[in-house]
Image 1 (cartoon, rainbow, N blue to C red):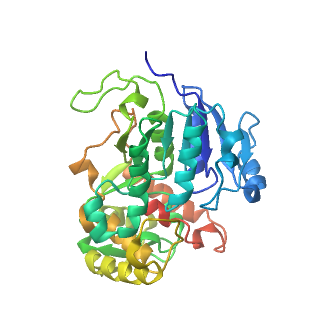
Image 2: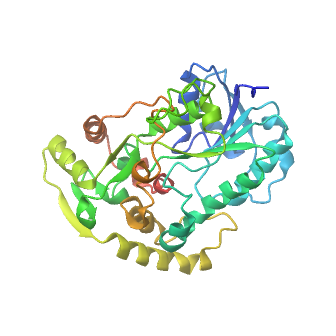
Length: 360
């Protein structure tokens, strides 16, 4: 018997960095998803303001604690076919509790964990170069251990592209001050994805739409949700280099950027040493706030350290199989410059370092 199509989808963390794009993509997808949102009680008003559509049902549960009871999810999980986690990156204990609750609900077929970053399947390289990301790997390993009860899809996207530039000095870029931090000469290819493309990838990976297939012809006409079942799914908007981005930024700002050259391996080593002081042993056993040094370690990884963000070359892209179009790099950079040109004031969200999860 063929699997039941996924119709009812619950998004957790819908007001975060990637959540709105996921909700919007689900809402516009021809699959006709019925969308629900689970939010913390403290975020209810914000969630309602962001998603006023009466067709989207909003549930509340205070799921921040790693000791949250499964009963907290009962009403929101009942009748759901899929659950998409867009919670903060290192919420291991929370996500495990959510997975257990999804299994207990009996109806949930698919869980999408909070990946949306580098390739965390490469655990050996992570241990050496970005050990804190093993927290994400452990969530997928837990899902793999429960595949008889629930399926999963882990969406790898590399760095967030357009959204990342909205924070000053994030990932080495500061558009308003015309400065850039360039890693290892700037010609290292890296994967990066616009925020809307991430939403489209999630919506496609849950759909029964027949796949156009991969470039080698495999997977053609297989429902996309079946193709992505229990798989790491690798997507991007483009594979580029820092120097390509820098050239386009200078073209569209009409300004020469002040460039600081840095070594990715040295930055990662220093960042990991500082992070371990706050999180000894990098044990992937609980939740974690971003600590001193981790941002720099992540940036170094994005730009080539450990070869964890070049999956178009070593794993292959799913863009064709999910029917995703390739974004235009120059148009994306131009959009970044225009966003800053239209910005009024400087004391807004771009000055808050909330984008670090986008880099892992």
